[in-house]
Image (cartoon, one colour):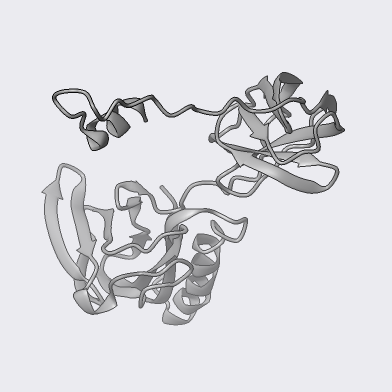
Length: 265
């Protein structure tokens, strides 16, 4: 819990308030992700202060509604609030407050911020910032930004070859959050993007030689380095066709052509 102690002199209180606002707002300067609520003190005086939470959507999807919660200790009470709907519950150490998003401020598009939730707090000379802040049941500071790339896929190899095609396989990568997929490249060109650990490259000249690499990527756009290259040769020959079945239309009862087509594929 971070404590901001203000003197009874109004001039000293106004000097401290900007410092509190700056300290509380640095959590996202490093690049947090998710839904984030930034706290700032906007005014303070001898027996209270005014503060705000700014909710920002750092996800890639629209957030239809949000719910902000925080605790104040005994002796501090929210006396007014705007840009949200407030409910409160008494606890053994003070009061638990919940603010829900107003209908006119929803939904919240990716990268957008809701109008700041402002509130006034009545307190004593020692003033304490809200504690245990959550937004949609997650920490208000959001999740740390995912800047880690997956590990490099291992053991890239050719597992099969058909007429004008090559099938590749490799060992799975790992990631601190999760691997989203793999890019297969020939030179700098991406020839396949898959979510599993195999891919078939088609449309190749029969008997031609090709050099491939594979890299892994995650949902945040981080991509691993390329794997060791694998050289493979496209297969030759022809793809077996499917022969139509013989149908004796003179048989009795007369065969049903739609039924035979469905059965034979």
